[in-house]
Image 1: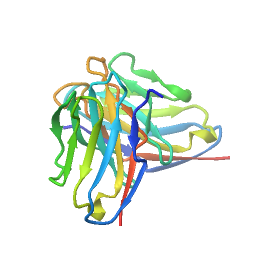
Image 2: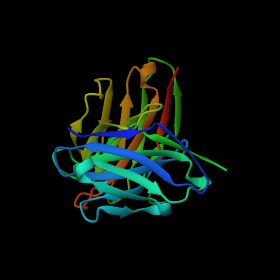
Image 3: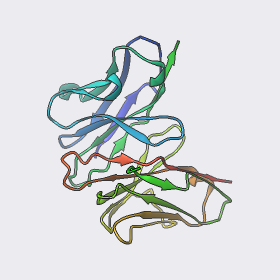
Image 4: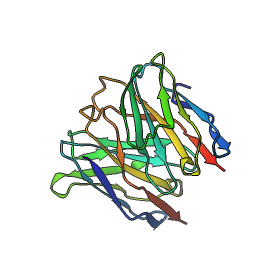
Length: 116
Length: 115
């Protein structure tokens, strides 16, 4: 079984500050890992994905994440927060298209607030 | 627009009524997923279709829920005898079988409120 834990349901940063959103996963098979962003009353938009190639993954809007197998972590970072980054962020794990048909297991989400 | 679309975007119903939601995936995508998202939680998997075949259903999908994808294109999710606990955002996602990472593209969701 797969699971995802996002540490911190709310993170608040100042504009221009570092953003760090934490994600730890559990998987019995080599995982595919994803970060999605959700704006109010909208669906989920893919930010980036880890698929066993480079451990440092770059995504859209200046976000990146580093896969650390020893720590079973996939934390999301952005060097300088922008007001438009305020949203809810979800970490998700999948086994690709294996026995679970690639379904995603999501964390509980982290709401990012950016202060001027 | 070639993204995933869902209709209606919002649905308010009274307890005990039946509701049906529709999802139109990206046209060449043969995999389709339904998820449910309650307030303050991440989305939870409900069911999966590959073409017209429903290959997996979550334990969350009680016998009041039924999903179809009759021609392997659009899908419907029906909830019979709605309960207040069914109030949630219902998300549809699609992906292409054979894509290396099974990247799923999400629709905007249907928000259901059961009074």
